[in-house]
Length: 222
Image 1: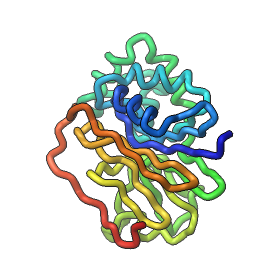
Image 2: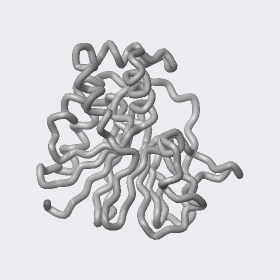
Image 3: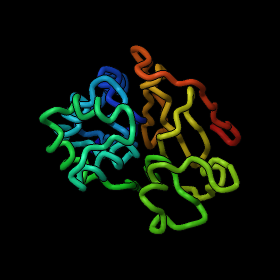
Image 4: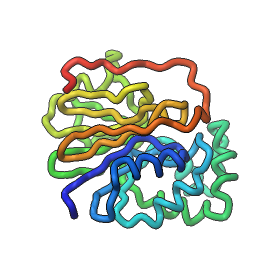
């Protein structure tokens, strides 16, 4: 390994932007690539994204809420109708659906490194990770008191997450949010470790309408 770890935000089937980002970071086979989840669904080309993922040997992925939902129905032998875009995701995957779901079924809920933790959405810092449910790890944004979960996170280990689309990354000394809303016409963002370099590429266009954006709190950012 070259020593670089490149974590990237929610792709949502935006294959062209993913390729733009990989070129921008000059991704090499020796890099450790990590997806924060939601590689597929909502966007224009989930099939090309998952085809790329399945043949990229240096890629690791955590489960996003979209993959978790599709996996739940796949395991039950049904097709999801929970979201309006699920039918389009199935159409895009076509005959790749079964192998894609077998591949996704192997993804973990978290990925750890020496000084970082990758999770799709978040977790309750008052409880150990082993006590968090899949729904929390792929869907949590705020704690019961209304605060974003990362404002209550006090550990030094860098938590890297996606799920919560904002125009700019969440930047805190111990937490970085990478979902910058590519599928909504925002950008696709990567974090290069250990240097903590952020790099974004713009979306080619908005594939899904987003009615409002919530900007991140920058307290403690660096």
